[in-house]
Length: 316
Picture 1: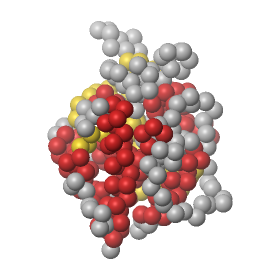
Picture 2 (picture 1 turned 90 degrees about the vertical axis):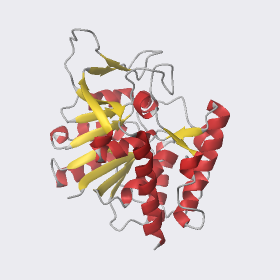
Picture 3 (picture 1 turned 135 degrees about the vertical axis):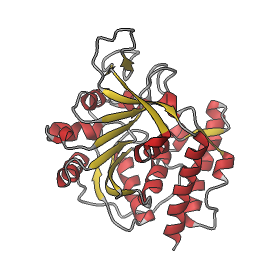
Picture 4 (picture 1 turned 180 degrees about the vertical axis):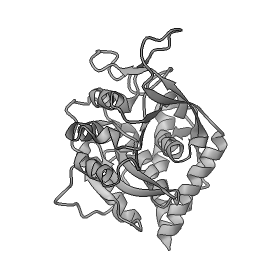
């Protein structure tokens, strides 16, 4: 039986690919999709989500919710990588909804409609999830599982020397989710960052004769150029796609229960995920953390297969 999934995304390039990978994935039933501000402002993320849904035209329309800006100012953006629209200028026509359902209400409604059976996959800041938990305090006990793309166990951050962007963007929301009673798994940057999507992998995606393949290349080729320009890399990170694959196919990861807390107020440590790794930890273990990826080559093959499956089914 397919797993029921609610996807929460800050709809930039890699999140858009994750949406494309899952929407025709036979192993899941997408019951909800919500947008959140992160890589792009909340209003842009909401528009991108509507445009993606119209473009892909899924066989079954999921419940849709639109997030608004967090209560914390974010003094950073990723326009240098993903453009002003978060999709590298790929133009998708959209008839924007005049009556948009708030993301936190959509999350509550989806979970309440099938308690303990819906898994949430969070690929952006945790603003929407925290607001849903505040709106409905019983909700954490009704969620099947939450997978979080973000955080760091060790290694360098991608927004400050020691913080990962999704947690940094709204650390108070992240701490609210971390402190909740639901089952949760963190897929940290220092694990997903060990896998690189290359130009050779891009060549295995559907070609430009396919409408969706054209869309993939229109987004990805500029990202490859910018990764080379800014980071000197001959490939790109696909952290959110890896998180989605781990959530739906746990065989791809080794995990460990760990005690964790999040710094919310430090000037240079905002958003740091702190793990009690002392010989005799005093904190209680409160989250499952992915520590190792299994078979990186097969992960890439599955990502390509899922993206191509959507491209082929959309073209029919």
